[in-house]
Image 1 (cartoon, helix red, strand yellow):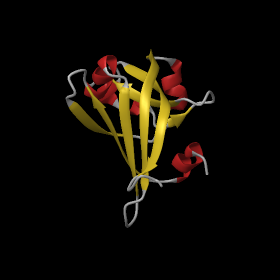
Image 2 (tube, rainbow, N blue to C red; image 1 turned 45 degrees about the vertical axis):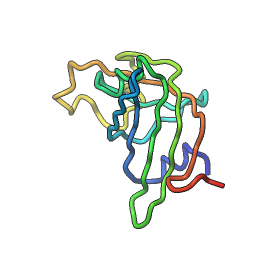
Image 3 (spheres, helix red, strand yellow; image 1 turned 90 degrees about the horizontal axis):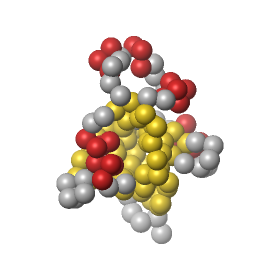
Image 4 (spheres, rainbow, N blue to C red; image 1 turned 45 degrees about the horizontal axis):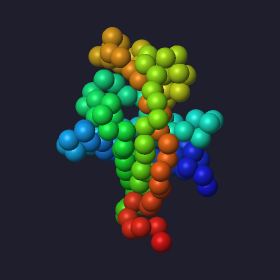
Length: 127
C-alpha cells in the first residue's frame, strides 16, 4: 500500500513538528497530508507558528499515530519546496468546508508543498 492509500484508509492523529532558524521547536495537531499528482505532499496551513517556522527552516516532521491499541503509524521527514497563499487549491483539496469555520474566514490560508525525505514506522527504525 502506498502512502496516499495508507492515509486515505487509516484513521488517526497527526502532529506536524517544525523549528525556527534558532532551533526552537513547535508541534501542532494537523490533518492527514494531501498527496499531489506530482509526488509532493501538501498541508493546508494558517498563518500560525508552524507556518512561520517554515519560512526560516524548511525541515519538518509529521508523526501519525493510528487509532486503536498499540503504537502503529508513520513518521514522515519532509522538506518544504514551495507554498501558495489563499489559492483555489485550498478549496479543492480541503476535506472540510472552510465556509463553516466562521473563525477563520478572513484568515490567510496556504497550501504548503513538501518533498518526502524519509519515511519510518512510528516505532523503530524500519529495519
